[in-house]
Length: 582
Ligand code: ASP
Image (cartoon, rainbow, N blue to C red; front, side, top):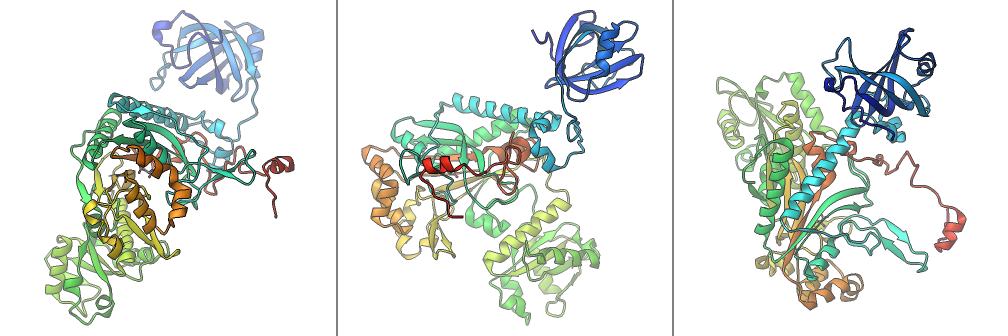
């Protein structure tokens, strides 16, 4: 038996018990006649004491050789501590050691294994197994497990069955590139790793499984944006014989359950907002609705004067910043510089100070009088004391720019409290999205998403206006889930592929299996997938998903600990029929 108790277990009620503990040496304090050692494991820290008067000399000698992170086993007696530590659960006791075994020595760790470590990100990733010994990382992984358990229990109680789907598949287009795996037994052929189990979960519905879920790894070979991982985890779900409303209800339930169980927060019904409305009022399809600063469109009231910038703009739009009238000239200039940064890309910013006395002072006083500015204030819902920030230009550019400004200001004003939660559904997404690069339409969600039946006639004439039965679940400005009602008949699926630029032959070659299945009694179905890493991070009140992944990749998609990706040897390449031409 390696241990009788964990390092987090013993209390005053255990005094005089003989115990065996095992763990890592957190630190030692050698006072000459007495040595204290903090022994750590996943469950906590217990103080050990070696005392020249009460401990055998050979044991004390051995204690003197213990270094940080040595793995040891000790036997001893639980005694009352002389100076108790109220901040530690085991702070009333210590172990008077009579036997110590070094199970394994350790090199000096390259950073301190403390909550606040001296190690930078890179070194901690290289030695992730040491990082995991630290409470913040360890606790995040335990937290992730707890969220996963709550998800499993909830869905299981709702009648969902967890089914595993394959990882070695054929490409499923979800808008990213596939990671591919060469097949040794099939020369020149490749598997793709799933971007999601999309087609398989639909086939499970054809198979009559009715309610499916899976906490599953997905793989997308995208250029890495901040806080994205090439492999990530989804809570993937599908249901048969459902309409959009049924799905929204179930997954509202799941979200509410998680917030209640994990954060103790009760949220009521989730508002529904159409994609159009979200874009118009927040410039964004995942609005953070914990605070206002809604967009006010000013085209009508700003275009009748000689201000050419506005007259020639497709959209003139503003937000009211609470209390912003107090900003100094310098602060406002800084804000203007901020929106002009290449990451945001605005050409400039017009502003209006709404003075406490009801007058206005703007950067365009030459063109607009008090009456004009009062109208702007009304449309942007600006109160005395606020600052109206106005951007203008092409709709597709200006909305994200103002949205970025809105989020930044909210952050600065402390309006994005991670302990406050506001969820909503964004619905009626466009079915298709124009892609400049390839000069054709792409499926905005994925090609299996059903158009709204009443919009199908528009497919030929105004494809960009066709709405989909697709929805996103948004929490605090993050898209945490997205899904759709699917096409379940061959004809509509073929029509869809046609509009996406597939020839019938290409569609058959790539998705013949799905369209065939639709001919054998496919039930109406739909589903959703949640980004599990992000969900856990939000529930954990953290910004980065990396902290909740045991072995994450860095920003270049590398695992710096195992050093992957890496070359493979010539023999392996040959077996895989791959000739490298480097
Ligand atoms: N497969 C989709 C995704 O990964 C989710 C869904 O439509 O259920 O975003």
